[in-house]
Every structure is written in C-alpha cells, then in structure tokens.
Image (cartoon, rainbow, N blue to C red; front, top):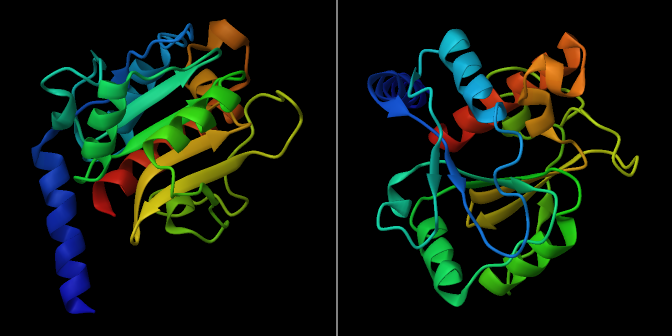
Length: 214
C-alpha cells in the first residue's frame, strides 16, 4: 500500500513539473477536424485552475505523419463528417498508441461510422469495450457515478465511453453520444447552462488525469 501511495505522489509531482498540452489531429476525408475551436483552450484553462498540472494553454495541431507526432502524450480527434486516414497515418497512429500514446476521440455528431471504420483499419483485431460506471476513469479526479455526462442529445442514445485496450492499458478512448467538446466551448456558442458545461470540463480533466497516470 505504501509503495502505491509513493508512486501516486511521484506521478502527481512529475505532472506538476512538466508542461502539458493537447495535440489535435488534422486528418483528411472531409471531416471538420478543426471544429469547436474554443473547446481545448477552455479545457486547458480549467485543468490549470483546478489541478496542479502545469499547462500550455494553446493546443497543438498536428498531422499523424509529422515528425513530432509521437511527442504528445494526449492526442485528440473530433469532427462531424468523414474521417479518412492514409496508409502512412495508420502506421503512424498504430505505432504511437502501441508505444504509450493515448488518443481521445470525441464524437461531435456525424463521425461515428467513419471513425469506427478507420479504427478497424488500424486495429483489426481489437474491439471497442464499454467502460462500466465504476471504472477509474470516472473517479480519478472528479466523481461521475453515472458515467459519461450527456451534453447534447444527438440521436437520444445514452452516452458511452468506449475503449481500446493493449493489455490493461487504455490506448484509445472514444466518447460517443456525449459531445464533450461542445460542452468545453465558450458559453455563447451553444448556450449550454453552466452545470452542463462544468460537468463536461470535469470529465475532460478526468480523462486527461487518467491518461497521464494509468
């Protein structure tokens, strides 16, 4: 037990000593990879205010074939339309994720079919697994006893947090039918009330904290 506490304290200290940012993936295929432009800066500001993690307030924007694509501990992908990876991007993303990388894909309504298709191209032998409400992701910093919050209705389905695993490690988290990115946006964009926006921001903090400490 003491060893686990020491490891956790060391991890928290290491996080506070490093500068963290989020790398948004610029993909091809017709999807608006750049959607919700105020979302990541707002999330990073909330992360900086509410945790001890040292934050770079500006998001990075990368293509998976960039030389520095493997230097970011947290990759983010969103959009409404078609996602399409080239063969080189598939190789690059697979390599990144299998070497301690982490991808958070956030369905901004409309990307579901193409995203699932492309993930199967990258990991044909892996399946997306729904995370139960008791999973550490929902309790790692803030507590979400009912799991992923619902920001926008979309098709009226319950929100799901789906994961790809490599052993016990989550390499990819797909937040579906939730639209966290819209919840992170400026209040004037979608007119969402603060409690909804705050729940989305808190869930974003949980995902980041989990990704950095799992």
